[in-house]
Length: 450
Image 1 (cartoon, one colour):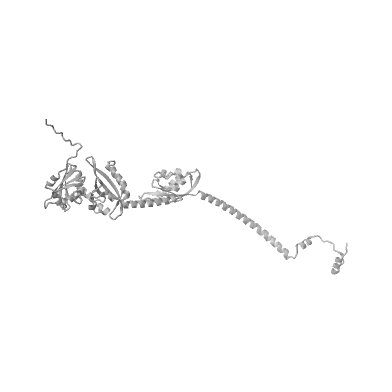
Image 2 (image 1 turned 135 degrees about the vertical axis):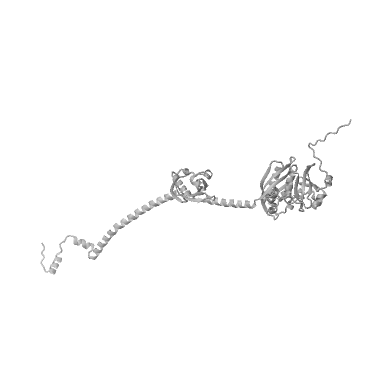
């Protein structure tokens, strides 16, 4: 009995590869590629490209074209079922029509139909094509295979990294990374290969041809073919100068914030709608309101001052409408501990960079100064009273001293001592006989004792 051979099933089995002998018998230049790499080429193609056939094998498929044709060829490989024909320039300047189709063995077959002599390129469209846009952009556009080997890149990579494009095609993209970016990039690459991520974006430090290091903001996404990751597409932008400027801007901002927060006085900035744009550390300490609570909201005047919110509003309105600076003295406020204090406030108009009006509020706690001024005024009053008393005492003492001095002068000039003065004013006494006789003889008169 003749047995019937079982029908071979294609499920789970790989199709036989395209026969190399058939490729060689084709009358046109032809090539085979898998995952963007040439796996076969006939002598006609080697003659057109001017390179030995053995040297073509293993090279990126973009070797069959040049310039913007590389990106157009890769795009054609991705959509070969819908658009199997694409006209591309050849390295020698001629053009050829590439007919692309899938063949057994997960390969792609390309046939080149050369233009006849005298044939010209079709007139270009007045607008740039997609390939020209990709080629002229300042961002790096690249295509990698599943092993991260560079299959194609645009002209921008030469100006950014300093390498010639031909030097990079066929090299591993990971070899360009610096050590600090290599390990994180490898981990992200593995996640993309496992399709845990649809795309990945990050900063990568890349070495240039001169040995310097540039930072690229890179976006990479995988390309799926037949249920597996066949390669990767990516776009990279040089952000080295941008990061430097951002770092300098952040440093200047931090320095300015440090200066503002180090001020001992309150500094508050509001916009034209009296919404807080700046609230320094001194304002937090004086009013007990954190910056996160008030920034972007209307200034809480009722919570800041004690019964003088309306005067504050008039000062802000004068700054917005009239551009006038207003000084508010002895503004009472409630301290965080509940005690009353006194502020000296100045409201100054300002203009923000967008042209809108605003106001700067500067304030200082003058409670202690007011207490010192009060004590000084009291001391000055006491000093005035002391000076007045000293003046009165001086005025009383001067005439008294004058009278005493005159009396002493008169006493000295009259020749009387105090004892004689008292004797002259005392009653007359009897004198002894000798004295009276002597007196009578001198006077020549008779004097009888009673």
